[in-house]
Length: 472
Ligand SMILES: Cc1cc2nc3c(=O)[nH]c(=O)nc-3n(C[C@H](O)[C@H](O)[C@H](O)COP(=O)(O)OP(=O)(O)OC[C@H]3O[C@@H](n4cnc5c(N)ncnc54)[C@H](O)[C@@H]3O)c2cc1C
Image 1 (cartoon, rainbow, N blue to C red):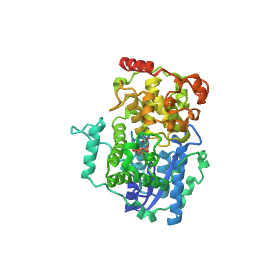
Image 2: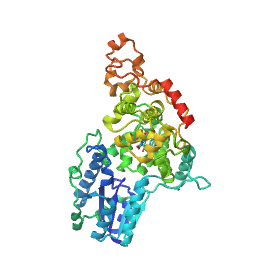
Image 3: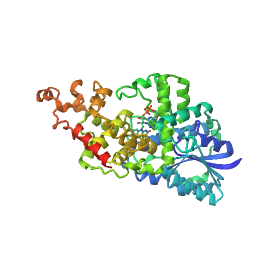
């Protein structure tokens, strides 16, 4: 038994069923819980009112409240470089070990290697555990030991493995009395206000607390059976909205899988499939770290995109003249979240209709999404751009108008986010530019005036995209 250890929170902002926290508490007499606002990550955020920081702050505040009221201790929140702070904290508190859950992103792997190297020099252990995914690294490979790059066989193997293994749970919450906040930690300037890290409260329509995450999980468990029927319709309450909670770990992936398994319906099977995509993309990036920066498929590595900045700007602000794309982008800008069907439509449109490098769009999503996760974002973008593993073939190009007619038939979603089209009837809402002048007057929408003309002609743009991919 270790006398004192450190538990480092990262993508696992909960006490409940937290694998590495459970290990730390089980193997140590006392554990110092710490979260670090990493200056390296913070410096790259475009706004001082970042919604992700707000969500993290919500979660930490609730956790701190729990520790204060139930265990008369605090969560240590620091600001700085983890590669310096973790070793320094361990040394000054006499900790013999640091425990944390594994992070699979290339930059995080490098950071953790540096931390470990520094700790080992002082004889301090660095222990990591799987928590963020169900199966990681090469736990699921093909018979020849190579990683799966096609989703369906991966998902089959994933389900088979899950069926043969009991999903383990880690009752960390029962050991929280071992958490401590020693005097020496005060020298590290603990953070008690968001402003101390140079950020301001941000406008988010959800709270990042675990309590709110549990409410979402419970609400969704009551409608999971309809997931398959409703999940593609952005105006319907069909999906779980759990992605920010899964991203930062206020809700754990094992809790979701357990809920899906016990629901046992067509809808829950479908939802389980989406959770498997998350594991799939995580192992893809782990096996193929080059795909974080370039095409997964080397064939498309040198695609030359025209990259028209004006068109990119129109896409970012939701003024392309394609209502479904504009509504999607405005949903992202206003809330920090976008429906999955719309992520596919907006991403496809940027690459195949506007001929802009998928990495521009990937970065815009990375800056804006409250659930931004490099593995799923990169996987989703490369899927839509046809440059990824098991991607949409480049010759199958989404028609934004048809997608709109199919998934927002009466235009309810479009009208919510594009008020210029509030009075336009369903028959014109997917392409208001075809309205006659008198209709435009009648429905208070004049294209080229209060709503843009389409920035491209889809048919021509499609021909251009096909050529671009053929030439590569
Ligand atoms: C271009 C593009 C970018 C994306 N970027 C991200 C991202 O940065 N972060 C992110 O979490 N998801 C991303 N996704 C996947 C997906 O759109 C979101 O996970 C989903 O919309 C979140 O809403 P939800 O929680 O209601 O999902 P639900 O439909 O309820 O699904 C439950 C969970 O399964 C996982 N999931 C669902 N679909 C996918 C998928 N296609 N790939 C990986 N995991 C999935 C998520 O963790 C999600 O929370 C992206 C998809 C595309 C096409």
